[in-house]
Amino acid sequence: QVHLVESGGGLVQAGGSLRLSCAASGRTLSNYVMGWFRQAPGKEREFVATISRGGSTDYADSVKGRFSISRDNANNMVYLQMNSLRPEDTAVYYCAADISRLYGRMSYGASDYDYWGQGTQVTVSS
Image (tube, rainbow, N blue to C red; front, side, top):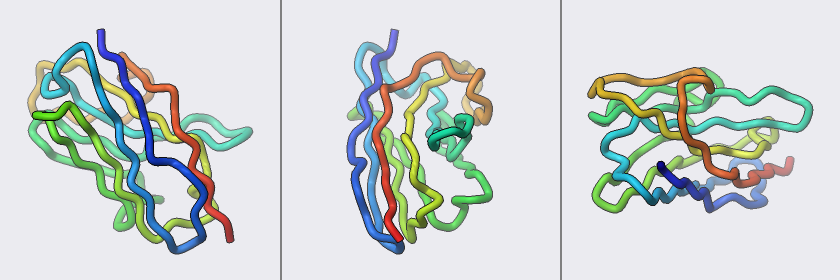
């Protein structure tokens, strides 16, 4: 069992930056593919970024070049650095963990993930 807690959300002006953190407890994160998703009001949860156990990363086209996912296995943390924020980035952001034996696997679908945090609100004003 993995317990995930996100933090770092808030209100920011367009063009600004935020760094989201995801703290894990219960199991070491080194055994998991990690991901960030987001859900805006009235919309479905969507993929934002993923990082493999080996550190490979991939992003949704809408955030590529602006967001960066990273992990600190020693401290059981995952981060999402968000730059050049836009009003359309406004959403609740969720951290998720996917149990995988594959070192290079990256996961893109919400159904791929086994554990989820409670979410943190990000609001970008224009």
